[in-house]
Length: 420
Ligand code: EPZ
Image 1: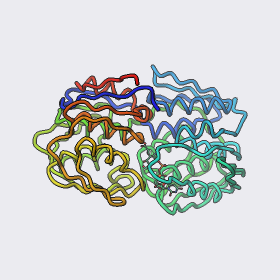
Image 2: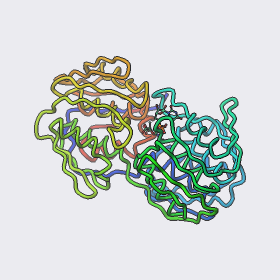
Image 3: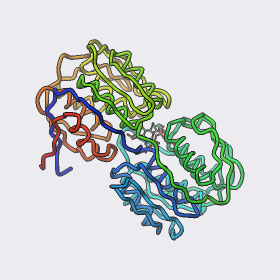
Image 4: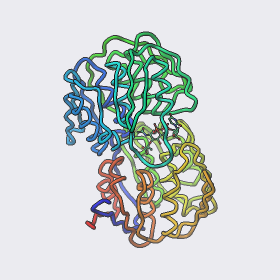
C-alpha cells in the first residue's frame, strides 16, 4: 500500500505547453543492451522513473558500472567489470523488462540465470516466444522455481514468432546481435522502441536491418564498441497528455514528441471532433466542439496502442453516444473501468469488449489504481470529474510517467499528494 494518495479537483481545462520525457519502454531495452558493448556507453534522455533506477541497480548487481544522473537524465554504463550472469528474483520481479537481461547475458556470455519478471497485472503475460527464440539460437533453457537458466553459444537462426511480441522481438535481437552467423526474426513487432533499440545496437557497430517491419535481419558481429545515445520520446506519455488535454476540453501544446508515432490516436481524436495539429516535434490538442463517441480496437503498432486504451476509455466516458472498445492484446485490461463506474461512468464489459455509454458528467470519488495505465486513466477521469477524486496506489503511475503531477500542475490542473 502506497503511503500517499493523489487528490485531483477536476473541471479545469488544461492550458499551455508541456514536454515529453524519454520513452520508458525504449529505455528499459536500451539500458540492458549497453552490457553488450566492450566499452563504456552513455545513454541520454532517460526518464526519471523507477524502472530506470531499478535497472541501474540490476546492472550494478552484475558488477557493471551504472550511474544514473536524474538531473542530466543520463546513465553511464561500463560493462567491462561485469562478473556475474545471475539476476535474483528479488530484483527481476520489480519490473517486466528485467527479462531483457536473459537476451543480453546470453548474447554476451552465453549463459544467464534470471528470475521471473514482474510488471502490470493485465493478463497472463507468458514469455514462451522469448525462450523459443533463445532455443532456436542454440541455448539450453530450463525453468525452475521462479528462475530461468539458459546456456549456449548463440548462433544465427530463423525465428518465426507464433504471435507478435514486443518483448520477444527485443529479447531475440539482444541475443542475436553478437551471435555467430545471421538471424532472421519473422512476424516481428514494429513498435518505435524496437526501432530505437536497433538504432542503438547499430550505433555500437551492430548490424540490424528491417527493424520497424515484420522481418528483422541481424548479422552477428564479434565486438560492439561504446556509444553515446539518446532514446526517443515516450509515445505513450505523448498520447496520455493528448488525451488529458482533450478530456478537460483544454488547449495544450506537447513539445519534444514524434507526431508520426501518434497517428492512430490522432486519427481517433479527429474522428471524435478534437482539433489536433502537428508540427515536426510538437502536437497541439484543442477542443472546438463536443466529442462524438468512437470505436477503438487495440492492435500492434502502427495500430491503436493497447497502452492508450485505458486513458482513452476515460475520455470516452463523456463522449456523446456509445463507444465500443475492443482490447485484443491483453486479456485483463479493463479494471480501471470498474473504478470509473464509481465516478458515474456507464460501462458494460463482456470479455474483451467494453461498451462505454457517454454521460453528461463524472463526479469525484475514491478510486484505486491497479496498474500503470489504469492509474493514468483514473488521473484523466479525475481531471474531468466535478469535485475531488482520491487515487489510491498512485505509485503505479510514477513507474511510467516522469513528474506527471508537475507537468499537469504546470497546465493548470489541481493535483496534489496527501499522506495516508
Ligand atoms: C510491452 O510488453 C510493453 N512493456 C507493454 O507496455 C505493452 O503493452 C506491450 O509491449 C504491447 O505493446 C514494455 O515494453 C516493458 P508483448 P510485452 O510481448 O513485451 C502475449 C506499459 O504499460 N505474449 O508484445 O510484455 C502477451 O501475454 C506496458 O508500458 C505471449 O503470449 O508485450 C500479450 O498478451 C504494459 N507469449 C501479447 O502477447 C510471449 O512469449 C503482447 O505481449 C510473449 C507475449
